[in-house]
Length: 229
Image (tube, rainbow, N blue to C red; front, side, top):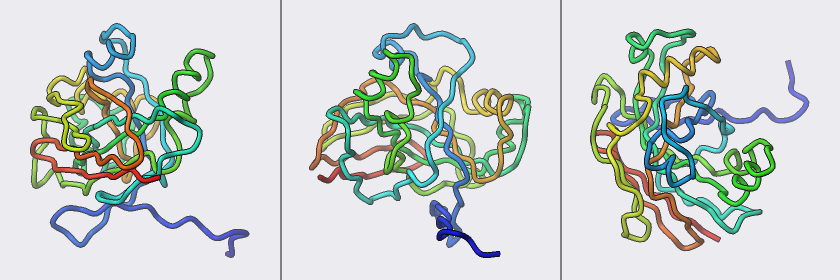
């Protein structure tokens, strides 16, 4: 069989301590999953079911690679997040079985064109152009769960040009990893290669060309992402 146009290459993330790579199938993101961030976005934190949005697979940016300042925005925000890599398929997964579906964890940045997102919210339109654009998902190497376990506490932070902007603990997730996986699997069939950005803590702020973002999650790793013109 021949394709009418060239087929897109497989997007993959390195696996820490291995020559293997992790092929990324789909990117799912959780909105407002830290109470303090929900408040700074003008919402009341609660335990209503989490909501999800998606990014295109080729929005992935490898750790250390720069991202270009995107078109159409004057307010580009960083959002540091724990990323979960799915290694086992499942649907309608019970919470107490959810971690069995995890291959590993990484550190990610959910880059957001905040002005476009806010305009979409105000008009009741979809968020895609604020969230789901090129180079919007920097991500570190995957740390296999067989090596690091399933982190449920530990510092999460991001610095911009050496100054801490976001700082929290992953124990502050409103919906933890197992609960998030269970909720998402009620809505779609999870498959190996899916990754989940689990939400960001408070302190989101703008970056400009020339800035360097450095993020960290205890027990998971680090990410470094420069912004270029």
